[in-house]
Length: 251
Image 1 (cartoon, rainbow, N blue to C red):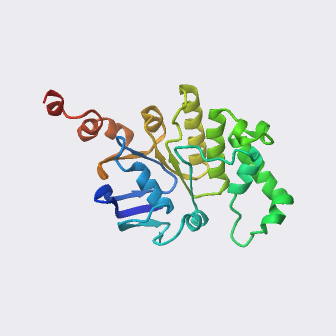
Image 2 (cartoon, rainbow, N blue to C red; image 1 turned 60 degrees about the vertical axis):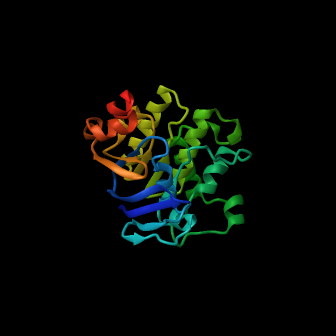
Image 3 (cartoon, rainbow, N blue to C red; image 1 turned 180 degrees about the vertical axis):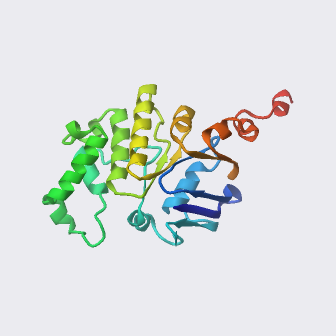
């Protein structure tokens, strides 16, 4: 479904992503991990079009995304969440989800008509999304009044509301306690069950190892390992990237 081919992004000589090539299969939960500064979030921003590549390309469902801005990539079926929650705090939970909703091609209606008179189908779809996020009871509350965990769920609900084929989750468990992480794991598995492909960028290894089908590991912008959770846990290069080599510790 998603293919990165020799993808690179340089910032004034710093190679944030350096010749990254990998493929994410349809329907899988694919993990992208690595130490801080390894290029994970830069990769996400290259996929969704926030950044343009220095070299290489991103292909989605067989289509080269070169030159497409973020909103066009959203229309193509790619949605995302952010490390730092980005909600419309002074709008209600329902309105936040409504704004994120992407209509099927050929069914777009005018902004004013949608805002004041959303169709029954649209309202039903939004309500289903709120149920998925366990926020149906907070639909009329302002987003800024939600607890932290609820705001995280609303961020996920907005990504789901876009009706994507692929969701990019950029550190969705940041700041969560263990109970909230387990709740997030169940929601990611529900997305997979519904046929949505997930690319998960995360530091919480309990979540990564418990939900992913395959994992890619980055270090200094390069791919250093790719495999199942079990294979990654036993990989010496991965342990060295996170913990440092014995030689460097004794030096």
